[in-house]
Length: 206
Image (tube, rainbow, N blue to C red; front, side, top):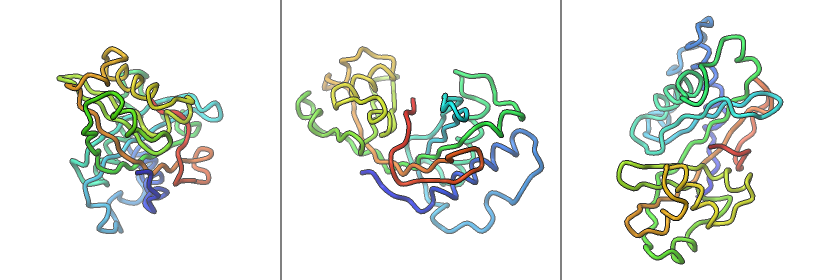
């Protein structure tokens, strides 16, 4: 379910432009100008900001399910990652030139139908799958690259997404807990406004 998406580099550029506009910089090209029809298709997307060169997390917000056109979801996620991540103060204009941007475009989450722990473990592919967990009002998501960066195996990854949802580490093993896996195309800047690479899992994201 890991995918390569030709939209990735353009998505990174458009995410930066959306943040620039939100911070009050001079507006560039309209974000919806010259878009291929693919940008109108609903897609899940996450935007991650990191300090450069430390790679310290500065914001990460997104939409796991394809509920809105990619161009709209990307814009909203980019601005929210910069201004509305509750873990951080809003990005200030002078910071933007010291931040790198990463965009993860998601495939549609696929239910993991197995209810037994062993079956669930067998369905998780490290370096390929991201995980989405839901239990009542609780939900948590971890992008595919988290397990790679942390050196986790399937069980550690499942425990991690349980804790991300605010549940006990073993919540994933309960048959009442809903589990989904998804793939992601990841494109990111090597340096602020620099070369954009994509198509393979990158550094850790929460």
